[in-house]
Length: 198
Image (cartoon, rainbow, N blue to C red; front, side, top):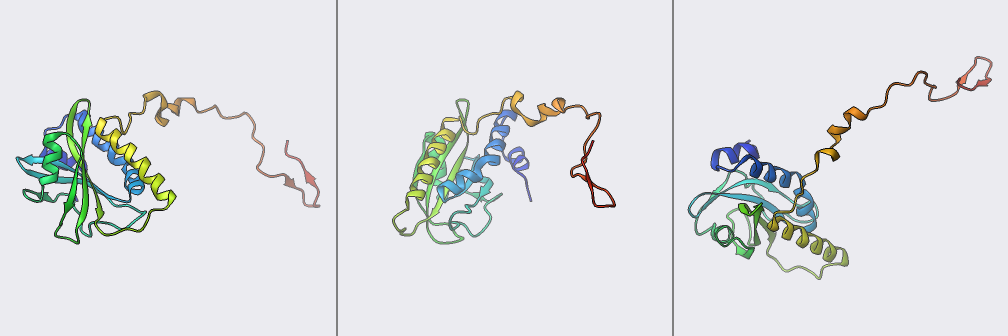
C-alpha cells in the first residue's frame, strides 16, 4: 500500500512544506470526517483534467459513501469535473456524483491552501439520500465542521505546533531521581502490625 508521502512524491512536485501541510491535515482529519458525517479524500492533479486520490478517511459517525478504497485511484473527465472546477477556480464547489462503487453521493470539493497556493483539493462525500431532520447535536457537529472546512480552504487548518509546545521539547525537563523513595503501600510486619514507610 502506498503512503501519502510516496504518492505525493510519485505524482506531484510539491515542496517539502506543502507535503508537511498535507501530512498535518491527514493526521487531524478524522475529526473533520466525524463532525461532517462524510467520507473525505485528498486529490492532486496529475495531468490536465486528471486527478489521483492520495488519502482517504471514513466517518465513524455515519454511513460511508464509498465501499471501495479510493487511495491511488486515478480519475479523469467527466468523473473529475468537480475536482477540476475546485482546482482551477480555487473555490469550493458542490454537486451530485455517481461513483462506480455505489449509489449517488453529494460531493463538496474544497481547495486545500498552504500560504497562497492551492496544493490539493479535499472531496467531502455523503450518500445522496433523503435524511431525516437532524438532531441538535448533528446541527452543532455540522456547524463546527463547516468552520473547520473554511479554515482548510483559507490555509489555516491544521495549525503548526510551535516547537516550544511539542512534547519532544519536554525531555530535558525530566526531574532528577529522588534520594529516597517510599513504597507504594505501608509495610505489613509478620505479626500483622502496620509500620509506616520511612
